[in-house]
Length: 92
Image (cartoon, rainbow, N blue to C red; front, side, top):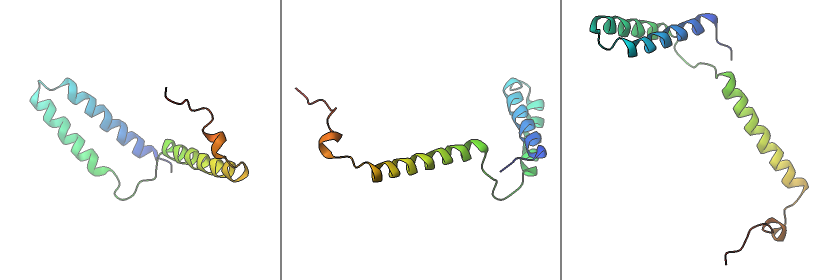
């Protein structure tokens, strides 16, 4: 669930090098060294499943809460057909 400091620093370094690639397109030597560095940093990333980020966990939790809330509401307050379509305007 939590990213380690090393993973955060690794991702920050990769992001920095990717941004730097945009500025050094006219210098092929610097571009090649940055691509090599990015490739080496990508190899340092841990293999296997990574835990989800906090925003993903919060999004899934909010969606589950909404589904459970709607299911509870439907069980307690049955929506009848005449009331359900009361506010829909009929075409003229």
